[in-house]
Amino acid sequence: MNTMDIRWRFFNEVVPACPNLLFLFLSKRHSNYNKIIPPWWLTNPPANVMLGTSVVNANTYNTLVPQLLKVNGRRFLSMEPQLSGIYGPDLTGIDWLIQGGESGHHKRSFDLAWARHMRDECAGQNVPYFFKQIDNVQPIPTDLLIREFPNLPELYSAKRL
Image (cartoon, rainbow, N blue to C red; front, side, top):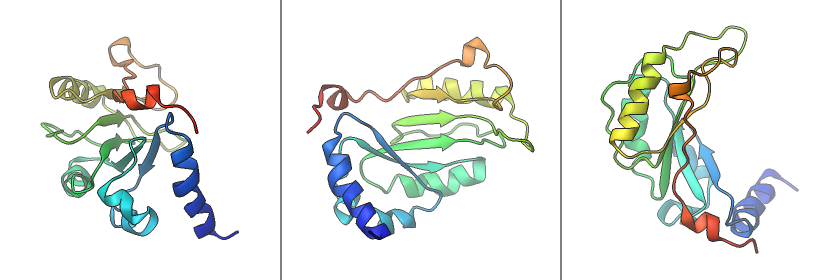
């Protein structure tokens, strides 16, 4: 079985057979969505699919978010590892935001002020906020221990085929 066979089976068999599961597709290159996912997903993606992009600083936010907003369906941002502050973001059209610092041996520092600012932006713009980690070592302060998920009632009521 080649890669296309596996991919075809995943998109055409696994995703439809699991309507109660949320599938997250994350890319820094949105042009890859056109190459990887089925063409009909670009206009009418399944309800249990979210397409996202990785944002690490204001430059990637300003470049990638407008591209993501051109994609139909549910959208999410993965702000991890966030490497600098992003202030005053317009989260219109974003259905979920996941934020965190970098882990690993050579991790770069993460400023908790960035997290608190984004938490407040999400609350003010009604975007579910999920804080993942600071650096995989430090405990998360209680005011940032937020693990919100998008409200997707069709997933909770879906029955597996």
